[in-house]
Image 1 (cartoon, rainbow over the protein chains, first blue to last red):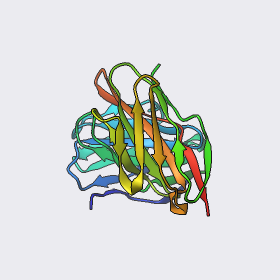
Image 2 (image 1 turned 45 degrees about the vertical axis):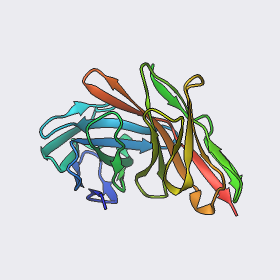
Image 3 (image 1 turned 60 degrees about the vertical axis):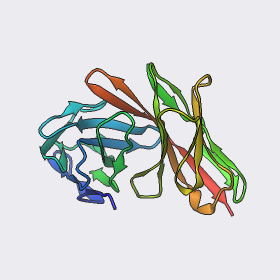
Amino acid sequence: DVKVTQSSRYLVKRTGEKVFLECVQDMDHENMFWYRQDPGLGLRLIYFSYDVKMKEKGDIPEGYSVSREKKERFSLILESASTNQTSMYLCASSLQGLWTEAFFGQGTRLTVV
Amino acid sequence: AQSVAQPEDQVNVAEGNPLTVKCTYSVSGNPYLFWYVQYPNRGLQFLLKYITGDNLVKGSYGFEAEFNKSQTSFHLKKPSALVSDSALYFCAVRVSNTGGFKTIFGAGTRLFVKA
């Protein structure tokens, strides 16, 4: 069974902390994505990566960075967490191609206090 | 601007009745259309997709969707709803752009199926 695993289900962090969200996929997918999900706004793309060490900004990259040192792992970094980054974060992966569906992790609910 | 609209925040249906969750899109070029479902405190799961060919697409859990090019719609349907279908449903469209591609998600529609 294919799997995308996010390292934490729930996180509580303090304002100003550096936060790491980890994501691992076991499907040998080229593409990996980080989204945030907020009520009424659907999913918004933060960053994506189509290959190792490659990254592209999504729609809302401000305040975030990413790292992809290995094909199976894609990390999202909040350089200095703020309360407006409280959200559900979803990692996903897919094969190359416009027609390929994405596989999602279970999500990390981050609360910044 | 390219967009996906799910005009209903919530859909209520009785168990055993047919259900429809609506989706319309506005994109340039040929769209690749997807439906995903999200159960509480979980990530999204793929249900079905339209690439080309037959306008009626069948997917997981008895769901199907009808692609209508003239109305730019891709409505999700099921002939007989189950209580277990209660969840949040997302329509998405993937389009090519400079640098590769982009997936645009709708805001989601919450489906309640009442026993």
